[in-house]
Length: 169
Image (cartoon, one colour):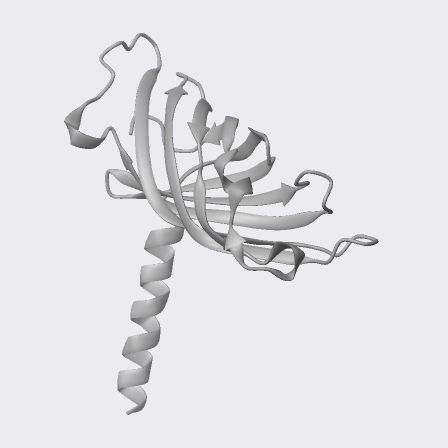
């Protein structure tokens, strides 16, 4: 039993080391909801994680996030123009959620749902990546103590500026 636990622990540690050794980029997305963005390489694709600061329509201050699995250059449709850097486009799907804190006469509320992600990026020949993307989320919220459609999730256009770890992907 002790040997099995030791083998399981070693496998978990080695798997975590392999996964953590493959970051893609880290930076910020500036848009309707500014966020800190982390992208992690998964084969030829990526996992995109964004932590957001929310200021929705004067209804308070909140925190939220998106996690999406993104396909880079899906359908083998790469952007052919490349000089010193590289153009890519990506699309993905995942989840989103967040909470807006109570403010004076407005109660706190939450949202949760499915998130999409589509964008275009330019990877410079030095470790900088610029992107323009849209991160819509569709789901439910309990704004004003009533469950309803999350209309705030449609405003997800942003400009991304990131430090690129592994160039050439």
